[in-house]
Length: 59
Image (cartoon, rainbow, N blue to C red; front, side, top):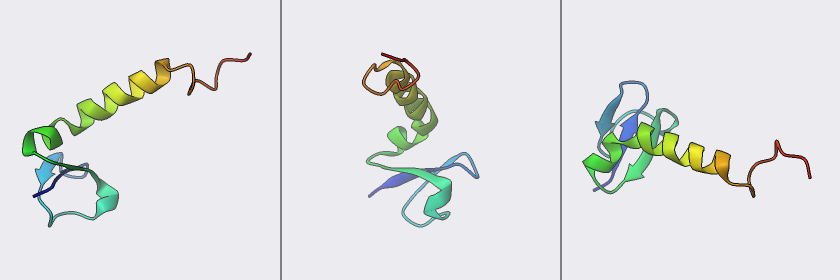
């Protein structure tokens, strides 16, 4: 089964839930889905620090 994190309700949902435009996922477990916002924040920080993706730096 897959799980999503609903951005509208700040809750974990199963397959049937809010529209995908309002959800993050899918995740394999409820625990992973419950960390969706934290995971997104961690990934954003990692990308912000990656010189290959940092287009704010001029060569």
